Length: 331
Image: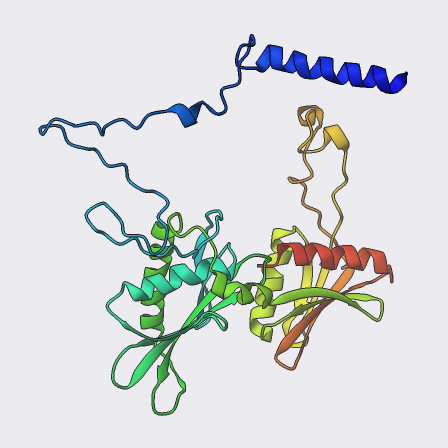
């Protein structure tokens, strides 16, 4: 009985579909109508009517272009999007360099473009080491070195004149300052056009000059710098962090300092929404200390320098806060 009912239903459904979508149904199927279409003649355009070709924005390699028979160069990815940065010319004694607040892989294409468009002849470029050699005269050449800076995501650019015979640096501060100044101006004018990163120079981003680590329970800053540069950098970092220097002993690499961490007053803090209700500001307060609370010591070993902080009261946690504060302001 059940089989008979199923058979009847199946017949009914089939008939219904044919009745609805069949040739004589309410909604006839048109999926095979194209087989009945006739081939018409081509449209004849008047002689005074010209065809407007549409430019092919997505050319396929190997196909001939229809517009003026011009070939389309193969696209190359050179840059990835990045932001603009500030550029400064810095000097410490006879040492001069350019400081850029961007990654070395971003500074590399700008520096290379500067020499490529200059009157000098580029001898050799190596994005892996960040070095560019430029012919200066028959007796010497210029060597530019692009390095990761002390600060995170920063660049330092150095330039030297090298003697061809001895391969030693020639002291010529006037020339170096002039060329670095020109490069600073070029960065300022071109950084918006070259705001990206060189894929070939990504390795330079990993060669950082500063790192912080814990050794024997003590937080230490390692700087890939000589003592003079490290001393100057730590001095500026403490000034930027408003760390009060009571005294210093440069010959032994020691700063005697005092530091009080700013209190966070929540909505009444200097940056809080009700800061106007607070009398005075922690940023305007200058604390003078008769006795230093900490020692910040710089030691040099194997062309590297190490910065450590020691609390007078032996409080390791306070010394770690101080050394972290210095590390944040290093540049």
